[in-house]
Length: 136
Image (cartoon, rainbow, N blue to C red):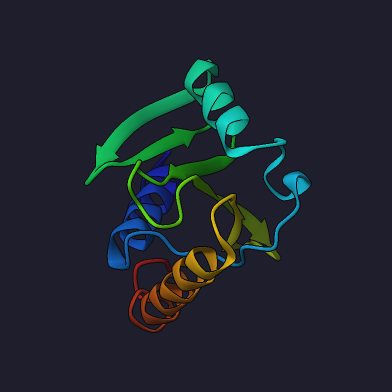
């Protein structure tokens, strides 16, 4: 349980540092596991393992914790230049170390998706260099 609390805290920090790290707008629908942003949103809102739903400055953030897995889904607000977009983040363990795997599916114009992607990559880079002491 302590492991999940630490991971949740780390994940929350990643969410807040740049308001949503991401890894690319050219992801296929298989990258997020749904054919569209709307399908992912609808599925997450109905999923029984969802432990938390928050809205932060219009961004819908849904935390899904089935078993030992930890996934956060972040949806852009209406009016955002890259709307509709979903960012899926999974904490997975590689060689015993937690790793953040991020996938992004953007259905907006390429320029808006690319701008969001660049902003989110910068946030991940900043957090990676500043958040390493959070985990043992």
